[in-house]
Length: 92
Image (cartoon, rainbow, N blue to C red; front, side, top):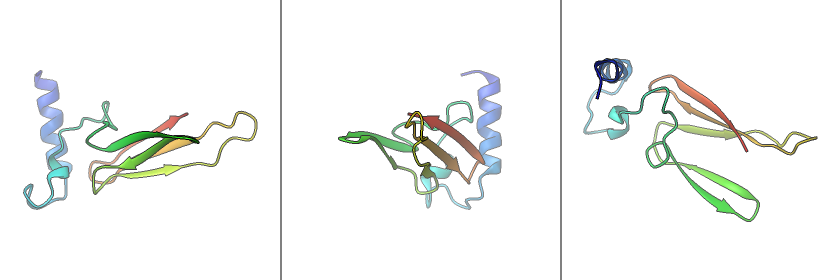
């Protein structure tokens, strides 16, 4: 692992507002901003008859979905982590 990744992990740990890592293991999940969201740590994905279904795996993360766009019927999923301030949009 590079020094840059180590410094980002320590920054993430400092940004975390959790008092005890044992009480909330998601606060020290080790997910970097460029990797967010990580399947298995932040969310789980399953396929349904109507398409992809995203379920949050971390107690802190949030997943929002938009209504389909009229012309293309593309749904946008918004993943947010308020602990570290991460956010990402994924279109499907």
